Amino acid sequence: MEVYLVGGAVRDARLGWPVGDRDWVVVGATPEAMRLRGFKSVGRDFPVFLHPDTHEEYALARTERKQGHGYTGFEVHASPDVTLEADLARRDFTINAMAETPDGELVDPYGGAADLAARRLRHVSAAFVEDPLRVLRAARFLARYRKLGFTIVAETMALMRQLTESGEMQYLVAARGWTETHKALMPPLATPSLPEVLARLEPVPDESASHSVALWRWARLGEHLEDDEQARLNDAVKAPNAFRDAMRLAALSRRLRLRIDDLRPGDAEDRAGAIMAWLDGIDAWRRPERVTPLLALIAHDDGELADDLALAWRLASQILPKALLDEGFRGPALGKELSRRRQATVREALDTRR
Image (cartoon, rainbow, N blue to C red; front, top):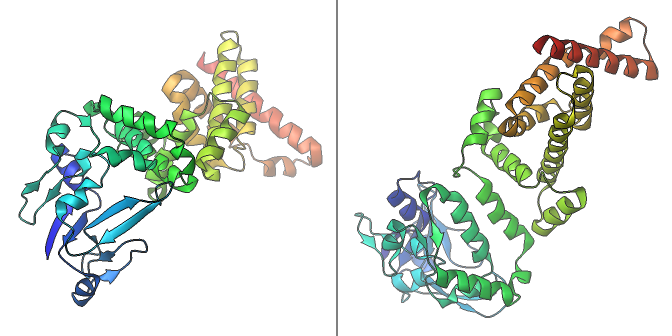
C-alpha cells in the first residue's frame, strides 16, 4: 500500500501559499484493508476514508469513465491495480495533478511543476470536456491566483468553449455551481482591499470573517445591476438569501453615491436627506450590522462620502424613540419627529464639516 499527498496541498506549497486541507491517495489498497487499519469510510460515490488520528481524507486510487451528463455522470473504478498516474490523469489541470511521496519527492507525470512555474492553467487530457464544473474551476483559479499572473493556455480555452457549446453546462447542478462560485469569492484572493477596509472601519466577528468577505465581494459584483438582472444572476447560481440581500443593498448604496454626486456642493440639507433615505433603505435601525460592510464598499470609491455616512450613522443612531416617547410623542407623529431630528442632527454635522 502506497500513500501520496495530492492536489491543492502540493500545488499551494510550491507556490508558497498557505496550505489548507490535505488530501491523500492510497494505491494498492482495498476498502477492507483501510478499515482494518482504523480508517472510517465516508465516501458515498467512491471509496474515501478518514484517518483515525488526523481525520484527513484518504481516497483509494480510482479512474472515471463518462456515462452520463454533468459532473456526476461518471462510472468510478477503484481497485488495488489502479496506478497513481491513472488516478492523476482524471484531474482537471496539470497543476492539480501532482503528488508527493511521504519523504517529499515530487511525482509529476503531466508537467504540473513546469506549468506552475510558467503560471499556466493547462488541462491534463481531452477528458477535460467531460465535466462542466471545470469551467467554473478555471475561473476560480484565475481569481485566486490573479496577482501571480496565471493564464489559461489556448488549447484549454478551446476545450472550455467546446464544453459550453456542447450544451453540457446545462447539466451542471446549480448547488455545486454556487459552491465553486463561493470558493472563488473566499480569501485568499488577489485584491485584499475590501477586508482591509472592513478591518479599519470595525472588526468583523470571527465567526463570519471569511464568509463576510465572500458575501460583500459577491455584492460588489452585482451592485450595478437592476433588480431583475440581479434576480436572474442569483437564480442562475442558486445564491443563498444572504448573498442576494447583500447584492440588493450594495446596489442601493451605489445609487446613493450617484445621487450624492448630482447634488450641489455644500448642500447639507439635500445631502442629509439622501443619507437618511439610504439609512432607511438598508433598514439600518433594525439591522445595524449592515452598515459597516456597506460603508466599506462605498469607501472603495468615495472615501469622503463614507466618512459622512459613518458620522451620520453615529449621530443619528444616538437619537432613540424612547426619548420622544418620554416627551409625549405617539403613533405617526413619533416616527415623523424621530426622522426630523435625526436629519437635522446630520445636517448640522455636515454643515460643521464643510
